[in-house]
Image (tube, rainbow, N blue to C red):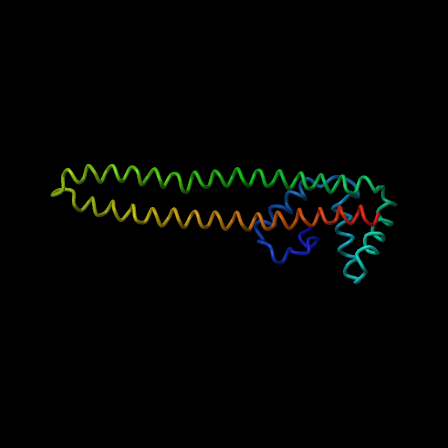
Length: 179
């Protein structure tokens, strides 16, 4: 199913797999947008113009019960599925931020408190103070690194999401134009 999206090779494979998996799990029964898109992609390999490819695919699909109204309706169903997947991704992303960044912030605050206690006992605890300061310095780097990875993952997913949804919307426009 990944091959039915023209930008698949350019998109983050993990993000695209997540989106395609959601489409596969929510594939409606019968000949609908997914099967239409797959057929159109196959016909595109014959180097036909877009209008001919869509009309040819629709002519065949209509013999299997596909109608002009069912096609964009089913495409809109898949956009809803993808929006659901995006909502779940956003929720998971918030959880990762909380887990990987906020917990580090809490750790830093706890260590700062320990440093104050250690400073009250400078002679006995100087070694512990140095150790804690190293942990704080590493925590800042870890938080920034985690934040950068999360932002990169978000950016890849957003790019994949926008590409897939944009292509589906473009297909809907083609249906309206050619069918």
